[in-house]
Image 1: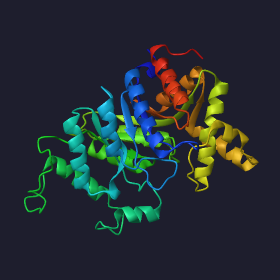
Image 2 (image 1 turned 90 degrees about the vertical axis):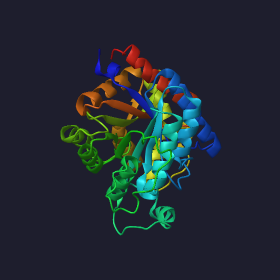
Image 3 (image 1 turned 90 degrees about the horizontal axis):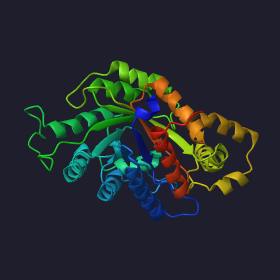
Length: 342
């Protein structure tokens, strides 16, 4: 059995808004996709937190997770992730304990330390909080874990506050990262780690292998579990996949220039007047996107698994056509049942 055949596959979906679509349609598409991949046998379905981006319809992963859990049967659902500095840890604990109480053993709590938006919007999100002068992610993470364990110091003022439902533990915690910081911290505190290769500049091997080598077992997790998030566009042929991936290429180019427009169609991408500099950017960015038919994509996935030692692959497919996106996930899952010969 190949490494690809025995590796769990999961999904990350950001509720991207299509250029010819609407925000509500994007939200409904995410829920429909979750039902589809649940039936296909995917392991997890994560949704993210972004703010003030016209290309992303949801900034509320807890709300979306609840909606998805209600219409799926077995797939784990969670945040990829909650941007902890935007929230009071008590609120995060309450919301995810409610989800865990309603859907036991099906919820994941992924946490990030970035704002998920621009600095002005981050200020608007946090201005009613007691803002620390520097990065306070670690303090918030410690507080969140104390709300779960209840192991406050004897003289701590929060010791007598109960997080409801009191007889439910928080779901498994994962730290998300695009640098080495979260890899080291995840290993140190003994939780799962997910690396965002689909947008990270940091070396993927450094992050993934550092986490594995430095992992310290904990009450939460006995063995390291590293998820590698990859951008993939798969179609029956290499040519069709390249056509569909034009949407990804143009969206990435625009984001690099600070424009977070809705996701363009392949037709709009094909008609765009690219400069030579634009094309060079797209070629470089393709190092973070696997595009092709099943055989080509399988080869790329196997290469990533062999080098990173990932325990799980989490696939994101940022194309606007829901039918094509669903088919991409079907083709990927089929690779595990009957790996394609290159």
